[in-house]
Length: 360
Image (cartoon, rainbow, N blue to C red; front, side, top):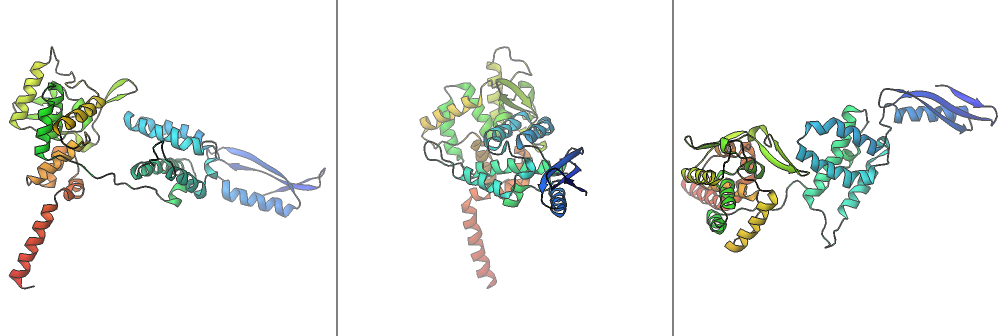
């Protein structure tokens, strides 16, 4: 590690090469040290902190991250990630060098996100805050794993927000039947909600259904794709997870309803979408039907929760329900047990009986 004398100024300077994050040799020079020892000490410190570290801006690295990850993620999922990156991360970190973003900078960003209020004084939800943090941490993890960044500063700070969202809502069978009656004036809406409630399919799975997915002799519907509308384009992708590819057994009445619906469509082909509506249309219809039926407004996805809760109440096992709805059985066990507080009462009563019988 040589240091050199600047004879004209009487000071010392450090001049050396180091390997950057791309593996390229880069020349580094710094002048103005009073002594040779100070020049060498600065070089030693620089090499310890910067050698093979990621000496590029956050915004530039985002371009690399995008090139690496975009093709590996579903288009609709990437759209959500990209919005967060461009709107919540790049404006704050964009011009800072990756290797210079430390835990203090991440904490300052977290404070800004935690302090946000919209025009109505409403903050970001805990779930959204966690999503923002997870995306920032994912970018730094990618840099650590593939581009020689030394540490993930977001991981040093820890998360903000929480994973659990708002309380899970669901309809009882009686509530759904009131809602369904209000939907009967629009057959397309009625049959769409029938599939959502009685089969527990996801919204994207419903909108991707075609006549060819139904086997009315076997009373089944095959779930093998999901529909999204992204940037004005109709996009059909694989379902959410590998487990989501499944065949659902349908009740007789629902088979008859769907046969009636398909027959009512003009010149429909086996590969044509049956429900050529948007998610916003379904949300509007949910608003209309809930108001007319006098039942609480739930989300479209809550119909899936309602189906699962119905099956649990009917006594089916977590494994059987998981196969039907495309979940892991452990998810059913832990996510939906709280829907049935009466079972806790039953357990307590049986423990009372056990104590009396055994004289514990």
